[in-house]
Amino acid sequence: QVQLVESGGGLVQAGGSLRLSCAASENIFNFNHMGWYRQAPGKQRELVAVITSVGTTSYGDSVEDRFTISRDSAKNTLYLQMNSLNAEDTAVYYCNAVLVVRSSRSDYWGQGTQVTVSS
Image (cartoon, rainbow, N blue to C red; front, top):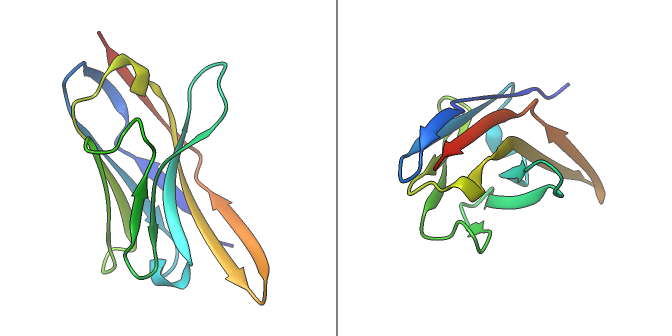
């Protein structure tokens, strides 16, 4: 069973930075893509950033130019560098990994890490 463990969340002042990590229990290149999602209280979960197995990245409109997704294959770890944080970035951030085998898709999720930005 795939396990994803997030870390790096916390409390930060507006304008500050945080780096989230997601450690996977297996080779991250096994997945078709990996990404970060977030969910704020009373809101739906939304896409933050995604990286494909070949390294193509995409970002949600509200975080583009502030957040950067990356990975370290030697550590089987996915990262999210978050800069210029503001109160609207406050949410629980979830790591996601997608595996597609013979047209069957499996989604794996971490337990989430809280990010709180104080204004």
